[in-house]
Image 1 (cartoon, rainbow, N blue to C red):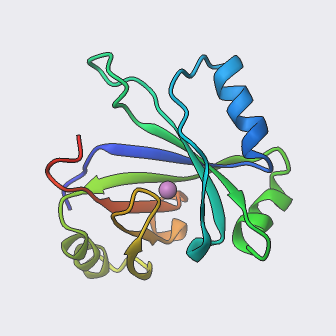
Image 2: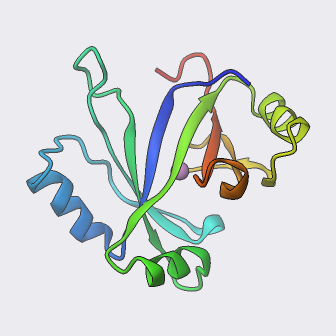
Length: 146
Ligand code: CO
């Protein structure tokens, strides 16, 4: 495994609209993307950009996640954390299938097959109990992603 860039931090929220106001008014976010539904994963998501080391808005993103009706896992998370909270972290890899094979080789529980994630590229999750307590998303990025 070659540790890649921290692409985003997933933050569950009961209200993306309220969270957008928070990141804009309290945190001073200047680039907040349009929220959109990911029906396959039962969530609405919204990306908030942060600056990278060069000052450009290409740093790690915050991924706001609000459950769509019928979503069980995020809804359960919000039941335990009514104000919302940190849900997962996401690292980039160049080859999703090689990354999956490597996690499996190390005995980690990969949750499902690689599938299209919120950025339109292949992702999978690794079980938090195998990842120091952190639900971890692995995301493939092409060479032209940044
Ligand atoms: Co994510």
